[in-house]
Image (cartoon, rainbow, N blue to C red):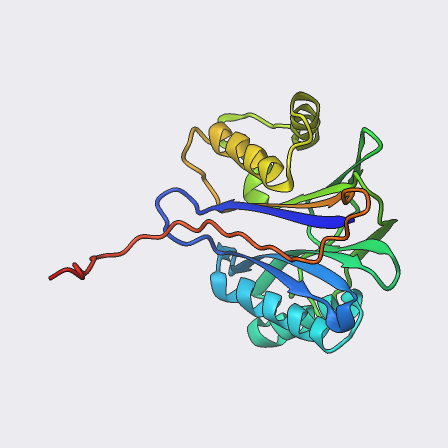
Length: 248
């Protein structure tokens, strides 16, 4: 089998940097992979430092071999100590755990995770408070067996709130189902792109918040072929204030 990960993100209209942090890490001893999506705020304002501090603490804890739930609790205590409750992060941690042969989703995030399996969509939407809001904050955890055809989708607040300023409330799960029904085996990246494009469209092409979409997709390998090459592809736009002319 193969794990394919798609990420699509955009900054709030008029801003250069998306304040949300995404990180994909290898788990220790070859036990799998984890994706971290951290949406940090300081005094209610999006803050990249909080997002980065939270993501780094989680990844460091996982590298040290602790369980995902412990890693999130450690990150929450870290943020609470640094910012005294004023710095908080909505976090989703999705792990492909080869030691247990399961996908583990740990959340400190009020927004749902969508799971597509057996041509049906399920939603994990248990109540969950942001990290750093209080001491000893615990995550909500869900777990499913690894199986080909499984797709998990996580998104940040800006995606779910898209269109709300115009009084429109969209159903992300219905849009996801239309993507999967209208397209022939879309890739993880195509799914992430299409969800993000719809959110941007609902905000009239001027995103009112930072937006990030993360897609985990489990695919079957070709019969008799064991893929050994790990591939990562990034497409990252950037701008320079000035450009040196290297020919002069």
